[in-house]
Length: 151
Image 1 (spheres, one colour):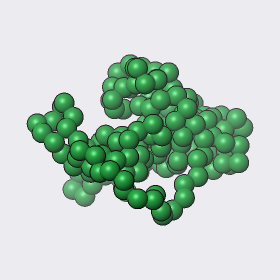
Image 2 (tube, one colour):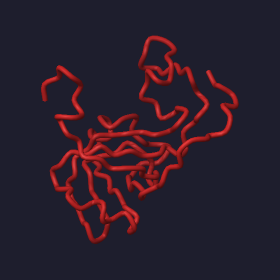
Image 3 (cartoon, one colour):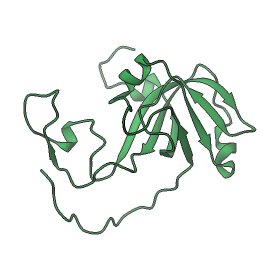
């Protein structure tokens, strides 16, 4: 179900920090990070040189959360009926890229790091080649696991 015109996208402005380099296009992109890992194709996070100093302190083997903008996804779907669930669900109850703000995230592992080139290789990513990157954050069990969950 489409929402029609949701009005202007007022609010905070986002800064693109780089682009994701993946082997995926519209015809073959995995539906989620689990499927991307199954295909065994690493991804490269190409960071704009102005943001390269922000990579300092990251390390190979470290898990990170990557936030990216699904720039080709629809922004007008409030209720969706994906094949893998029993009926229509609200967008906020799904991990679909089609949402009011097409921000997606994946928790991935750094497999290579080149600080001078502003390049971070990760184990996988489930987005089209050239997808805009919004942020990279360290994944920390002490912060990112829900309360009462063992790591």
